[in-house]
Image (cartoon, rainbow, N blue to C red; front, side, top):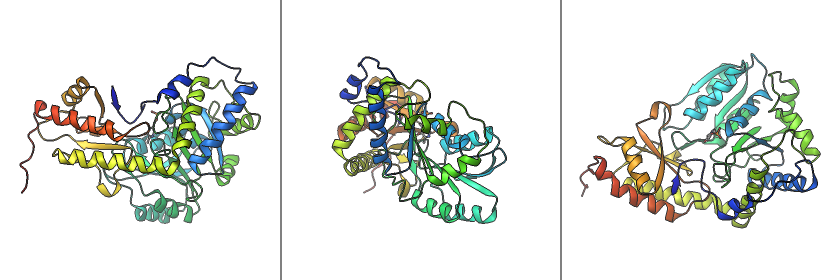
Length: 365
Ligand SMILES: *Cc1c(COP(=O)(O)O)cnc(C)c1O
């Protein structure tokens, strides 16, 4: 199957093979060596000297850790959202008692840094800002550099969901002064689901010392103390660590600039190919994501039968989430992906579209 969903993504053979290895004592020297090596290499891809902690959790667990370790109930939080995942980040903060103010932009658009600046200027009681780097539900990548300038310029804590971007889209965590940054193993890292990665700046650790939200499994200070001994607080997903170790080896061999460039190229090919078929993109193209492309369902075409027909031809794409269900389908192109995967996807689309009621707009001369 050509698995073209934005996570879980396909894994290279050496990554799959690594997981067949026997278990080791997770409090012994073999695991310690792996833990320290992958932590070090993750920092390289995060482009950070900050602490980096690995949680056995889905990406959402990492987002929850980003909230509960740095905030107290009643803290005012500005939740910048451009889609389902931005909304989820806000919901987690609300669940733990934060006083959340939402700044929601329409689906398909990026957050406007000037509106973020205005919201911060209007309300000096805001202590933290949550934002999604790459909104997987709409295929839009925020201008995180501009947003970070505004938020850090105002001296606020900046919490970033980079679950579907980091590893594939350039995100220099230290250069942009991002305080807390979360990613997830099953997106661009070519690793199965099960691990979440989270970087923590010194400014964020200061907030941690004051933060009173309840936490236990996701306590990052505990995770840091364990890491200093070469361990994790709880039993880690050992096999997924083997996979991560193998994937990082492959990623280092390719190199971050080449990985970023491959994603840019493959994404551009996807967008051009989709448009050439007469389809339209959801995203404002200036901010179109290099890891996932959201395509509007054309008039008269239903998403469900379209996806089913693609699946019969060996191509699996994702549907829309939330309010976009039935309105779009999404093509994932992150992690272990090449031009050939995209060409096969486009060829399958060309074949099935007429069968599900699509009539190409008349070519304009
Ligand atoms: C996938 C994703 C998540 C959630 O990850 P899970 O592992 O499904 O919990 C959060 N944010 C973004 C941007 C994502 O793409």
